[in-house]
Length: 523
Image (tube, rainbow, N blue to C red):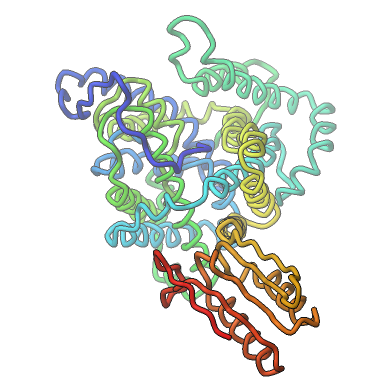
């Protein structure tokens, strides 16, 4: 996902250019097969995200069903698949801890409504304007805490709490696992899951088409069933019993500033992740491009339904989407059907879910956290642009140290400052020629260069020369702060009896240089 926010490329050379709906009937078998592949990828992720979020596993499945049947049916993005996302697990867990599971429905509901509004007013593409460094920093800031938090359930232990506490507690966790045979079995299953997630695609033959997570779940179920093995497994109940629709008491919580902040945070992060993913998925196929505003409305519709049912928030997910594309899907049928398979499995075979070791699901999420963290992106960004590297690293660290919203806001602010500094490429020189102190300025003169300008003007004023010449003919933009400073300086020095010559290009009211500007001077 590291470059997911970039504009989607057009059809590749050699592609047919045909839309995904040109031969829907002929491809129906492929669509069904693709939907089953997506279902197998989504099932462990839906459950794992729910467990990591601190809510019942059933809520993850409900959100997965909604992601297929509701979001999947709307014409936004043809092939991207939605459901509960690992990227929001830490945020959901924090929200549940602070406000309780009962308030989650209200937060997700109004997140969905706000997404629909943003889509209707056509702000979907706004999220593509976010700096790549901030996006990658956000993803890394989500992935790093997710990895360390899941090391604990991977060992059938409880995480200490904050990201830094989880990181600091790893040595103690290793010692505890080494002293407990059952914990070693659980951790071993988690490690096997992680290893399979990395190497399974390299396995020769058609067997590699089976999702690695599903293989890990099968191994985990088999090991957990052996005599003498006592690892923690899922506690799964009835889907209908898990539904907890918000009532008047929960809606009254909208008066709480913390709830409003949570809604805004969920809206920004869920929308950004979905639309960044859409751009990434568009680069994987040659079919129709994503309609960003429509897709944002689709995500909003899904979250509205999820909120009404008290389920987890929904975003588009790269793992499921890429599996859908690789399986040969061409229409929305596959992503919609995968929701139907999730529903059928949960209703008809709930006893199978109760056999899955929690450590295996935690291992799946550790791998997801690693993919989000994307450590290779840091040295790559360092080589490409060290300023952007600083923004990316700062965003990651602030999210890890505080929370997602704070980190993203700090990252956005740092990105704006970096862009402003780079736009303010102004050169200021001061020197003496005979009886004249000269100050020459060229480039974009903004308030960020004001300290250097003031320093040069002060040196000219204290030079003891009877004449001062200010040459601004090379200035392409002069903002209000710099213009005011220059005008005040000229007035003061003339009032002191010095002769001041001011050479300026002809500027518009906004400070932008007029083409073929004329020189004007004042003496």
